[in-house]
Amino acid sequence: MIAAGAAAVTVAVSVAPRIAFDALGAGPDWARELRWSDLATAYGRGLAGHHLPYWEVLFDYPPIAGYVAAVLSLLTTDVLGFLVGWAILVAGIAAVTAYAFARAYGLWRTLIFWSLSPQLLLSSGANVDVLAAALLALGISLERRGQIVRSAAVVGTAAATKFYPIVLAPLSVLRALRARGARGAAASIGVLVAVIAVLFGPALLGPYPVSIVVAYYLTSAFPFPDSVFGLASLVLTHLGVREVDTITYGLSLVGLVLTYLIIVLPRGLRAHDPAVGAALAVLALLLWTRRYSPAYSLWALPFFLQLPLPPAAFVVLGLGDVLVFLGWMLGPLADPAVIPFLVVPGVVARHAGLVAATWLIATMPLEER
Image (cartoon, rainbow, N blue to C red; front, side, top):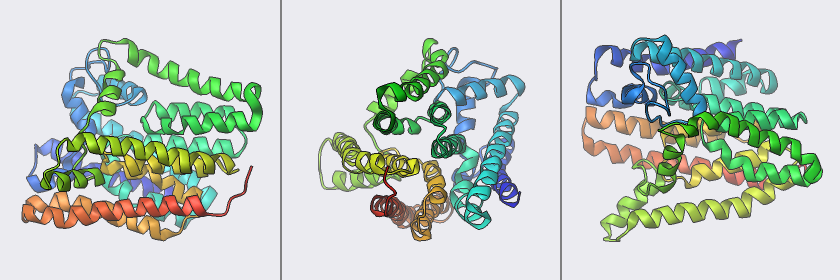
């Protein structure tokens, strides 16, 4: 219960300034990172007034988040109530996940890698990434116990909460076919497809389908400034290179595909433990995405518990996330010139942590299937 309580408190601390600044108004420039909330932004774009995501307004998240948001917007009268409702849900999920992690992996590991992690503190109050990370961790645990069909249903639900778990689909299908043949794998593959179809169905049929969001993120060329591709874009632009966004888009796509084919699939298919392939798939996406949001580091946290990774990679990853956060917060407070001196080392450190974790998983001894 200590780990669960700590996780709930961490989420509460993360969301408190966001709720406070919404109550008080916009807040000062230096508090941008403290007050930023994707959920509050989504509410302001159309959910106010009890509008339905996908049917009456465009919503930037997959269906599970949209359905929960619709219910909360009906139960509340303003953005504060909306954020409080999300905070209770996220804190509860984080606490339940911490309780399960502590039982499986021990109290101290859970406190370090989940409940008291800098990522949970900095980002959990702004978005729904905790829900997807928790669901994916549950799906992996179920597959470890041989509950393949249930695992497929949970992973499908995770993909309907945040898009990123869909990166596991090719590996999961091939693992199922290799282990049980076409007939034996039909049940788990069918459940995965059915769950995704059922959950995405209503969000695809409205006037503002979620496919608009998917298409935007797949085709939008410009990278986020606090990603490695954002830094690369700045350097290339300074050197006078043209079509920089197109170049970084191509590098991102090719890099992801090659990493998946060369590292994720061979390693994931050989490993008996499904967490190996799942971790490599998610880390490959994090390594090559051009639109790295600070909350994305939450996706990696469960793998530091589920796999015997040394703490060094986690420390470097956490240091990077903290430096990026401080850069965007302290820049407006002190001097904007401070921003690159914190954000650039932060992005580099964060990526180094991801590379280290990928390398460690790709080279660790395997119990083969």
